[in-house]
Length: 194
Image (cartoon, rainbow, N blue to C red; front, side, top):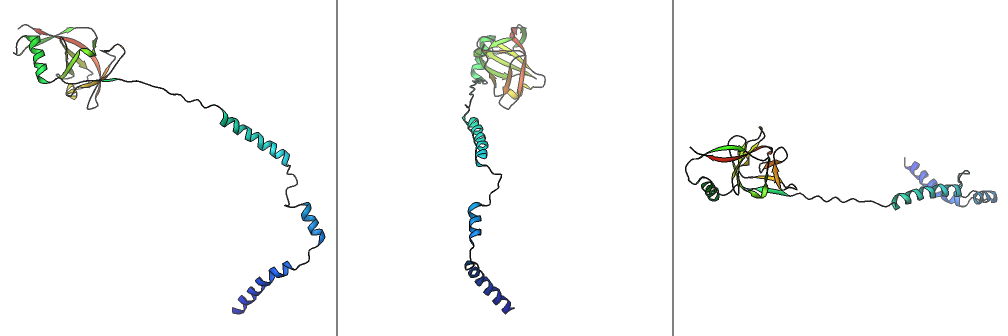
């Protein structure tokens, strides 16, 4: 085994010397000069460069085309109607009623829209009804059947419209807990004589 490695090493060392000392013939050198890299005889650099330049032109046209960026600005105003504190609410009711005794109210038909700026507070009523405290009156607002008034204990949000009003079958009230309910009816609450 040792002799095998010795002979292999000797051949590996001698081989480059044998190749370097080999005589070079003139025809071999002449052939290398004629075909230096053994290139493909069908290779035509002029034709290839035209094809490459066409692709380069297409790429340049693609990147040189104007880039159109579009900016869209939207403005959205959300109004929060908070529950009024107890003192102003009781004062408003006292002004409406003239007395602090238990009063009955009757619902009367009114317009299907009310101005948001006139709402001073909200209180959950029974079932799916909210009581809106307006500057000059009380209004009962009925919500979808699937909605509960108690979800609106801390007020509600409404998106501002161009006319500045909340309307039946158009606007949705959103509670702070996430309930999103459509307004289905508005009625004015009028005190009834006993």
